[in-house]
Image 1 (tube, rainbow, N blue to C red):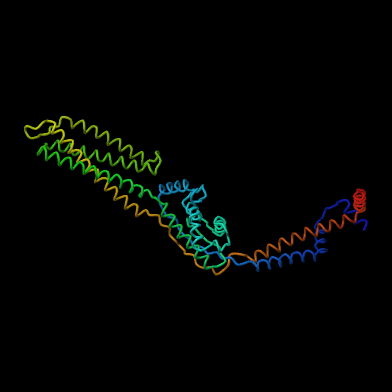
Image 2: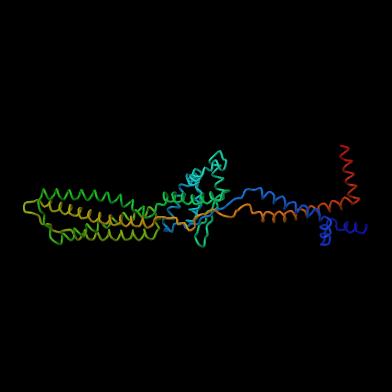
Length: 397
């Protein structure tokens, strides 16, 4: 015994492999008891827990052009405070996941399924938090597929809520997705109304002039020049409208805008040259009329043809924008609708029991070594003397 104590006196608190096996064999009942007790306790707890089911649906976000994505991301950034969307979204899929968790969508789900009562929450904000905890959304970067699921105690309600989330997301998306084509259509629609009013005024002015002054005759060269100038002026006006529309959804450094601005500059230079050539063009009018009559006729004719050409150009662009708007409609495509799951997603009883066994085993080992250490130290005469001295000190006080 003395030799054994001397060994631990030299290496106090040190254990080799044989010591480990010795302690485990000595305290095997403690280790087995704690390990099995932990497993049994967790197994009972897991059986008492209500089963939770996860129903999932898979969607593809709208495959829209980059300008629409940038515009919609900017809209969400500006309205994030009202929508309750987390800022910092960088991709269309992240954007739609953010929309899915926005306050308007959550509130409609809460109302549709009476979640205030189901979650036993007094305040809507708490119901939103509970619902957010149950929503599971993930984005597959490789395939671009978004998987959306909801956990609930009722498998059917879980599937219904997951499908309802997609329906509400579509409603939200329809209200926010203002595409490039939609902006062009709205802008051209306003410009078309103005062009139509200007054309009506030009027609009325020309009609009044002809009724007052009679027929005015111009030569073929003058007529061609007037037509060319009017058409070019209309093209410049239409191009200017196009550039202004592009500036509403693109940055000034956008190559398309820079190219359109260069085209506009070239057309204006061409108009200047054409107007300089038209100086001195003769306009023949009836004898006895003032020379100013011909000039007025030329101006009215140029305005009329300008407004006619501008209206035709804007009308064509307006129709093209309407077609693009219908074609670029952002549609969320559902790959798989959610169905009531047959198996629960939580609790994972087998995993819980395995973790309990591992945790219980290591805790019991630590406790066994602590008890062995205390037993060996308490058998040390120096330790007993220190304990007695401490007791005497405490009793004096």
